[in-house]
Amino acid sequence: MTPAIQGTGLVRTFGGVLAVDQIDLTVRQGECFGMLGPNGAGKTTITRMVQAVLPRTAGELAVLGLDPNRSGAELRARIGVVPQGDNLDPDLSCYDNLWTYARFFGQGRKQARKSAERLLDFARLTDRREARPRELSGGMRRRLMIARAMVNEPELLLLDEPTTALDPQARHTVWGWLQKLKDEGLTMVLTTHDMDEAQRLCDRLCVIDHGKRLLEGEPEALVDEHVGLATLEFQLSKPDDLTSVLFGSYRLEETGDSTLAHFRDDNDARQTLNHALDAGLAANLRRASLEDLFLKLTGRALRQ
Amino acid sequence: MISIRRSLRVCERHLLMWRSMAGASLVGNVLEPLIYLVVLGYGVGAMTRPEMLPDGLSYRVFYGSGLLASVAMFTASFESMFGAFTRMMSQRTYECMIATPISLGEVLVGDALFAGIKGAIAALCVPLVMLMIGDPVSVLVLLGVAPAFLVAFLFASSAILVTAYTPDYAWFNYYITLVLTPLFLFGGIFFPVDRFGEFAALASVSPLGMGVQVLRPLVLGHLPAWQPVLGLVCISLLGGGLCLWLARRKMQVRLIG
Image (cartoon, rainbow over all chains, first blue to last red; front, side):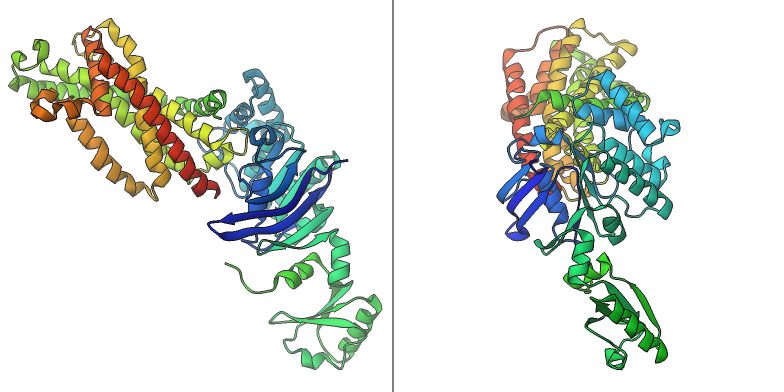
């Protein structure tokens, strides 16, 4: 099966500044592929190249078998996009938002009416059809945006931070939806820096920073390989105090107010925990997470 | 390539938006010319003798028949400055549209078409007001919908170009003061351009001046000369097209990179 997205050596510069630097990208059909990276890493630039809005500077790219630089309109007709933040039409009601969007995809008036009804139902906003977006809660607006992206029954859905700024209830609802769409076989590319979200939804993911791809693979395998299986978190800033309790092979990481010890072997971690408790040190044993991996790769320094 | 069909979908969205405030918009379209015509007709009209104006027109009829063009210009310009800038920046409407098969160029053409329609509607409200206050209006004015649309389309396109470059709403004042206001005053709306002597020709080839020369005869019941008709068609389509092309280039960089 040809991949949904196949990119080789993708490059994009803005006025001589490299935003995307020789990135290879493969997204298989039917998978949820995550793009992780700090702000300004180049994720949105890649998404825009894939959605045929931004031409690439160099490299090869095929999305759904089409070249975005050449078949932009044809390709956009087959993609759904949930952008970062909110770009619902504030001048129009929920229903008209969906209706006009359907019209943008070339649907006839009658078909657009049907689409709008179907999607209002999908978003569970049938009773708010005449409301303007500003009268909706953040969760409702997000539901409307995801529903809108489904107007053309896309073969590929691009989501840019779909749950940022949502409360936990709304976030879980959105995750449930996305899981359902994924189960139905929809290919998705999810840009996020919510590690919980990535771990939950992504079959595979890549970590991007400074326009370069740092890693690609299945989330659990990546964590196991690059961080370890278990992590002990000590409420200590000086790792010197730990030398007496650490056991087996480990990697230490200082975060400022605590020290992390990553272990490849569960038993080493347990032994260390026992030693620490005996020595009266506060420690917390947990599974190594995607967040550990992310911070290991991209560093802890604040970004612009 | 620009697909006019897709541009019309953009235009349709704007008309849907406009429908919800059409009442307020139309009241403005009628009230504003009404005030101008009544007040200037009363004041300036009392100081002008019919033989001062061509065809022995009353001042109010002379002024009203020229006003259509400037109303088209201002309506389209404001829509394409404040309206378009809001859609481009704070509302992110353009960003939403270009995620669909519609391209940025098609969005801008759709915007200009909408502003053209809006300007033409506002312009044709002027002869309606003239009728309401008892001034003679020829049925030929119905043909004026086309030139009024062309004037509005041209100024919409040029305002969209200004919008593409403006960093902030405040910058529109430069364009309004340095371009629109002089055109308005030198366009032959308030008084015949022959008052400018040897510069009359300059005033009569200005885009707005040509619009006045096409629209005024239609209100008064005769066909315009062919020169301003040809001039208006050419400058609207070519100048408007050029403005939109340049605007697209700039907005592409601002919106997308």
